[in-house]
Length: 499
Image 1 (cartoon, rainbow, N blue to C red):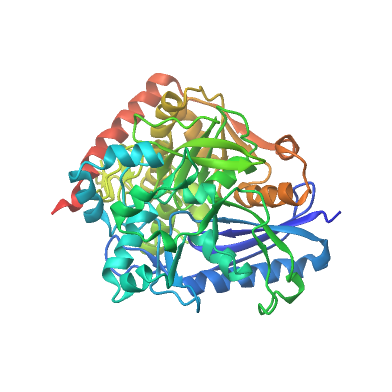
Image 2: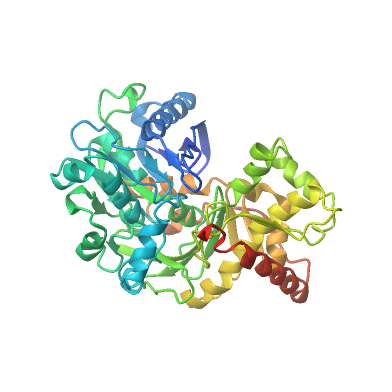
């Protein structure tokens, strides 16, 4: 039996492909960045063709570097930046506008109007989501209302909508589908009935003819078409697994039992807890989404989303020029025993859970004449940990489970300083896996479960191995004092863009 699977990991700043063997080892990797577009303050866009071309390039390169024959590939899994919204021509495949990225806050006025109309409760009951520009639904509405001629074309059935998973699957196979986990992040999907909701679509003026077919997370969606340049040897390989990046990471971390939780430190931070087959609605501004459906069994997840985490380290490097590499942030942070009372709130594109303030903006507070580069670097890293700590106690309340340990992954999880501080303010152990490529591994698991490489969730859970655990080194009183200062800082960043 073919024992290899390829994961396409299409992220916010780069497209990657990783080829895994049956033991979950990465055999080969390729990664290509693409340009970010900021046409106005608070707006974020990608060129859909950049997404597609870099992902094709990564897939072809990872396959070629592996030295493995196309016949040895059992399947391809996809994981992706969620909520990012694309609309394209059904016949030509030409996008009608740039992809509007999940971070983009341009639809704040739309969500304000919906809130004024009393729609918040209905949205939460149906979709498990809060009313926020984060999600795809208002982004679709913006494209239909603001790009000339697009609404008429959409209502005539000429256009398709998709999140990034749909865009890739459509181009690779010709099939217009989305998996349940990505569908549950659109604000158009009934997460209990697992179908598109007609009332949500009417509320946002989205023709249902645009929507992809919603499908489980581990099944054959289609096969790679012939004639895709650079992928000739992969023609006919099934695309047979998909999940949004955070749900994929939850699976890749082996969080298959209710109460198990993970946090991914990427461009943003995303904390998810598996809550099993029930779908509770949050009382604390958190989200309920489909984790996955495999073999007819659905697992739900409660989630808290932090919009800017790793992007705050990039800000230090690219905009302020205080560091030249991400690792330098750690080096600087360890030069001082604390921040000297400084806090950095990285609300560059608003605040996510549990605040949900699209008009918040970043702030640096508590600085004195003695504040230096090392204090600011440390405050940025600490700010990431504070945001995650804000989520966990609320998540336990909403989910009904107590978390014993937080499993971590993502680029910034390699920082020993950040992981130790996270354990300190969280007052819980942090478990970092030997392989931090858990997002891609989750997509590989879905494809491999569909293709028969693995037989069940217990098989993939057994492949996870711990690299290091971090335990709290300060007491609860000290942690509470630090968190109190953080909350004072957050309050001062709220509603800054109101005027």
